[in-house]
Image: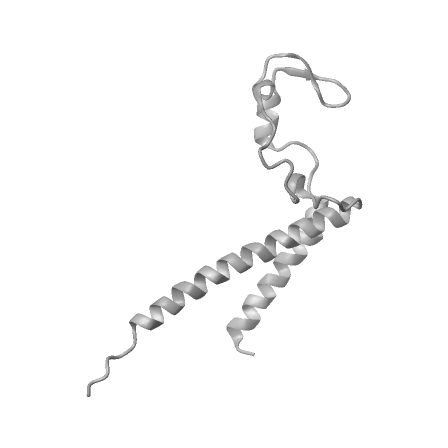
Length: 120
């Protein structure tokens, strides 16, 4: 195999490991934006807003909440570790396929315009 192929495959493998395994160890605490949006409100044990005034009171459900990969997991898989890992791996493969397809199309188009003209 050529050197660029090894480079791409190594990168893909690293991304799959990070998305499929390491993503399970990410923090479950809200990120910075969520933390700021929740400032000023009080919450019960189930994390529902019970009082106060904050931006989080006007949040709505995500429009993709019923999709197969909603909530950083794969719907239908009951094991949380496996669900998160599979959804991450699916995301990596889909992104790689989309990026590779665009690259291939651009490269194929570029090659067709660079052909030397034949003289008869």
